[in-house]
Image 1 (cartoon, helix red, strand yellow):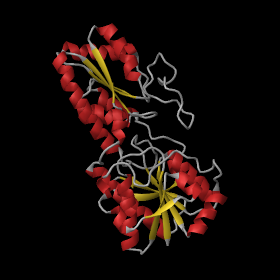
Image 2: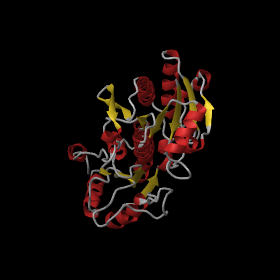
Image 3: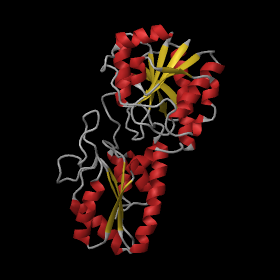
Image 4: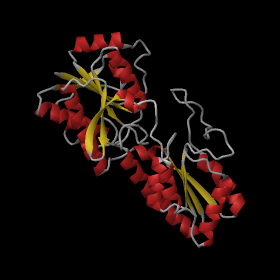
Length: 341
């Protein structure tokens, strides 16, 4: 069997480990042949592939990014669609596709599967917001990077007796902010799931300062203070027509400084959270997901996604993972809020 692999959407640590896991098991156990579609769905639509022999995946589990490249191409645009993609697969002798990506990638994979193509999915997002899986690879690494950066920010904040605001990724959910904030001992964690007033944030900052601490605030990029109607965006739209988020920390810093009299600095971590080598946890999880994806292909489980359930790898239908984001539940936020102020 000849299997095509693609990585689509935003990159994240662990993508190469998925490719390696799939290729090594597919070759060693099943004798399959592998090719890679270049730059996500663009390669699928255009039939642009490279061979993936065992030698190509040697040592790549520890590498960040993706050796196949990625894009945010919609496979139904630019002359795509199931008929075109199916014709490319037949011409190239490709029997099935392993699609590695987030909600957009998997939604496209579902539509193509419904149209009769043989596709299985592997969930990918640093935000950890995909439903039907407990964790996604890339999340642990992003949290570790954010925590280390916040630890460094905290020391300079303490030296100058400043309030520090660290902005992390999280368009719709606050998992990175919650975990990194708890790990770094934040005095306030602000996430999209929780509307919080400037007055409450100010009180947390004052309380920490009154105890002789340099206040530390961790905020997700998609956080919306209760006096605003939408997330802060001043950089236009991305290629999918969504507002480019970022800068809520810069908006909060002068407001908190004016209200508290404490010198306040903001730092936006941005894409640094998606780069670099994956953590050990993410390497192992990604490898296991890649191996399980090959099993799904062998068993013809089209239209399914491999997922982490507890400590085991399970298989779920695409529709179970789509249409609803996995948000931070109230009890998890309440747990963290005990430590605020």
